[in-house]
Amino acid sequence: MNKDYIILAVFEYLTEAQLVKTKLDSEGIRTMLMDEKTIDSDPLLSQAIGGVKLLIHNEDIDKALLIYNEIRTYEKDVEGKDIHCPKCNSTKILVAPIQRKNLFYMLFPFFEKRKLICNHCKTIF
Picture 1 (spheres, rainbow, N blue to C red):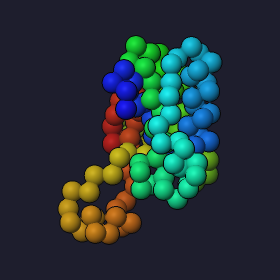
Picture 2: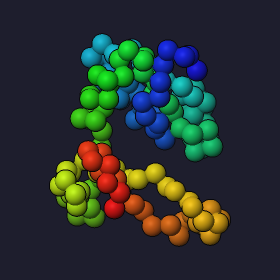
Picture 3: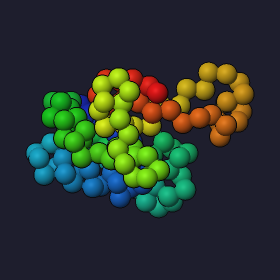
Picture 4: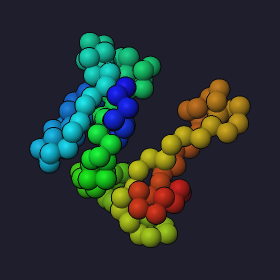
C-alpha cells in the first residue's frame, strides 16, 4: 500500500466500493481501490482477504470523510425506520465492530448479539 494513502472504508462487494469511489472522484478527491481485482475474480474471497479497501490520499481525508458520512447507508429497524441514538438522538447508526472478549464468542461468533454504534457521538448500544 502506498504510504500517501489511507483506508477510508472497506466493502464486501466491489460494486459498493466503486459507487463511493466514483462519488469521491467527482468531488476531486484522489482515490484508489485495493484488492478489487482479486475479489472481482472470486467474490467468495472477500471475507478471507478483508474486502475491497477504498484508499484516500492523506491530504484529502477530511473532505472525503465529510462526503462519505453523508452518503453512506445507516442502519434501519425491521420496519425500515431510522434508529435513534439513546444519547444524542442522531439517526446515523452503524453496526459496531465485533469485540470477542471471551473464548466462547471466539469459538461461536454467531451467538454474539449485534451491537450498534452512533456515528455522531460513538455511543455503543
